[in-house]
Image 1 (tube, rainbow, N blue to C red):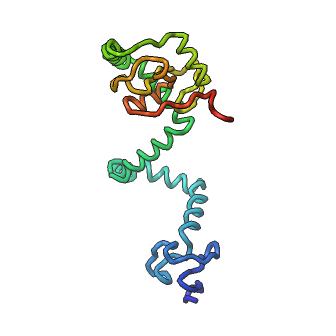
Image 2: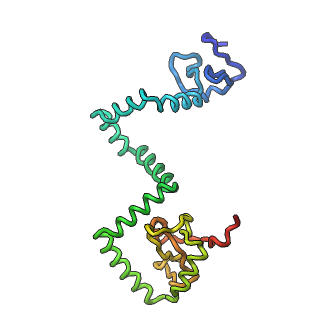
Image 3: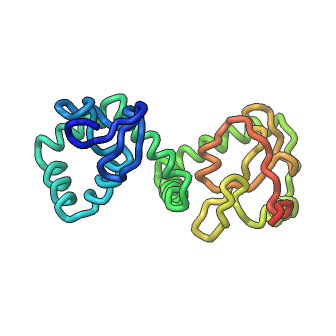
Length: 215
């Protein structure tokens, strides 16, 4: 037993918070403490911090730090650092997979398509697509397209989001047009604007129609 009353047995130390015996590696470094480690394990410290972070005092402290000139400067440096950029990218990717993230991306796609720049780019893109399609099979009919929508239960083939009047419904080439993909029933699936923009010209497997999914 150490001078502070902490029990050290067989290479493990008892946490002063939860009372469990854990290896020294489970405790953060702390100069001046017994064994050079903090008394509380990392798991207990994280839990205590989560509880504290929701208190009014913690929120007031964060607000004060974030809105001070020093806090703004520190946050700006962090955003420009490699770690900050990696964190933002990871959080953005996780948010994009949520229902709220997909809705946000859909609204942004609709807003862009309605903008002057978006309309101009869409005309240019369509002109290039028409030029490519002129040399490729283009046999998809409206009846076939309606049948495809029914096969996928009027949902995006990739994220399975149900279509509604506020969404941009696109015809996505499974084998991209830029790679020689024809405009035929076998090569077209319904996709929301966000997923179509995300996959672009990447090769992908054709999603299984919704009607073939087992509940």
